[in-house]
Length: 229
Image (cartoon, helix red, strand yellow):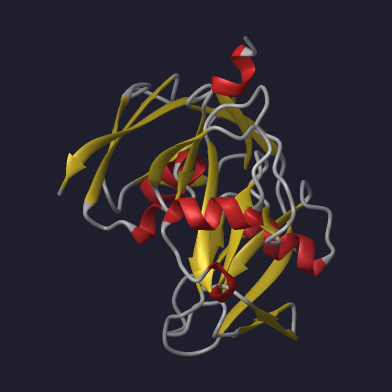
């Protein structure tokens, strides 16, 4: 008996976990599994390990061999979202886009440049992490710009190393986005963020929603869901 035929693979689509028997499912199969029908009216993106969002066409396959829980997100195809990036206008077929995807569109060195969302009220511009998602469906035109970054340090989030500008703070939302890139789409779910090997007299602690902490080389973060808010 071929045991591989009975093996199931775990995927997360729109923050809902599913099991699928095919090790190389098509975009069509994944959309059907998510319940989004007719599938021709939707698009599906996969979140790559580095934070890039990559569209999977209906007949394109995804290799699930030897991987953890693969994360996907779906969108309806009846809207285009417009934004500005480094003075140029772009159109995007989904309401969410990650920081790394924006850097790729800007054609900058993703390791040497930071991405910022321009403030609409002359306040502080917001730094967007590589794996952090921005909702383009908000009212008004979102304007992004890239800027050469400061020296980077390595932080660890759920065992995975990530680069972050030295001496800069990281927010609760930015930490959560490393582990749950589209967490903002699920406002009813709450998260616990713990850190250790931090700076100064408080090397350990908890990050609450809206709070931030300055990073240091080797700082460790643990993120977990705590249930419904």
